[in-house]
Length: 90
Image (tube, rainbow, N blue to C red):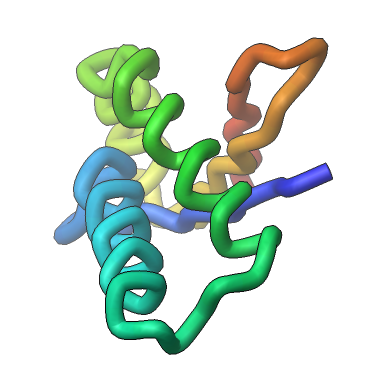
């Protein structure tokens, strides 16, 4: 199962991190650097996450923790064919 971890910061929100990773992976495929199934799975997972996530809510939840000095990590994965995520605060 493909699982992606994204750790936003006060300067870079979860949506920006997901977009950057999506574009970086897509560019690596277009340049012929990566063609493995794992990379393709990550691209598809990120694409669906970017299309379906409520980023305003995710930003509000994560920024509250980040401004309190905590570390936030989002895990993005599929459950029963649907893209879902989990936020972990440490």
